[in-house]
Image (tube, rainbow, N blue to C red; front, side, top):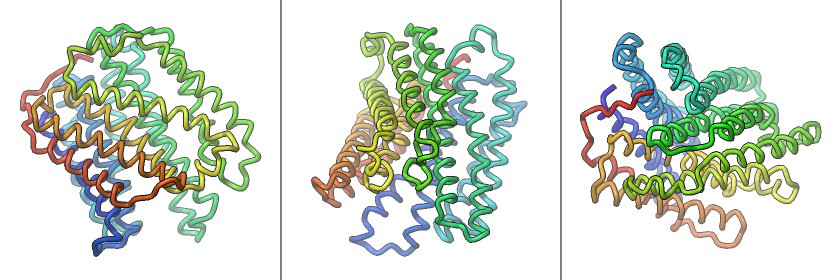
Length: 404
């Protein structure tokens, strides 16, 4: 898998940031496509364009050797995924949910199944010393949750076809799908890659505590769906499950913290400042995300967590950008797909500042303390500019192979 292909993933991330900026500017400039369609295109390219493609590249280059990459046709998988994802982008932007967007989304799922099957098959043959490490186990469970999440769109399509779009049962399927995607599939892969980063750099972590974190976190994923549905009228039937799950997630997170060395940041001191910054933002975002997710079960926060659009958007961005994207970007530097330069430093800092400013702006707006769309637009533009600077920086054409 060629290292320069990582730029394709960054192109998708740039498109996501650019579309997000256009959506923020809707009050100031004319947008010639339907707003709702652009929102759908924005979210689908974030998931299937940026996150999925960079995940393929990282997992393949880290865990699969050259012979198996060739035998498994991983390069062909990636190329076909790019073609299909472009179809998803165009069809959703032009028609939203319709015939062509559904066709491309279905094709994407078949490619997804193909990748997951090949990856799990090929990594079974790793040496037992690597096979039993918690990092790979977390990643594989994440891929299983990825498969499980793909069942939800079929139910969503059936409900929409029967005229139940917008109903609570329809929304429940949507929220379950999103939960299994970013709290199951993507987050598990990211957490596995974080532990892999520690392993590759000989940073000792407590395997026992990491294993307990993995077990509790895995066990909590399905019942944690209840935390996404508390705002529904029928939530009284599973509030006990939601409370128990919040406690379980809290316990899992404590094991995660205990698994890490207390001097972690000293141990990565030799890394570039930008990589350390991305790791810091990732850990801070994951910590805040876990606190908010566990707190959402409390009546005090219920109205904010389920009915306050700016707060909901801030949480989604905290999950998808803070807890997921920054770790992927850190790994791009670790793989030397991005080099340390003034250009990448400026891009990385711009992206971080844009992320923080948009989060603060959304939170202040949701709390009705301060509302300024210009700041929100400027933050979105800063993220787009930051990714653009990373995109135009030089790429190391030599593949850096990390043994699985």
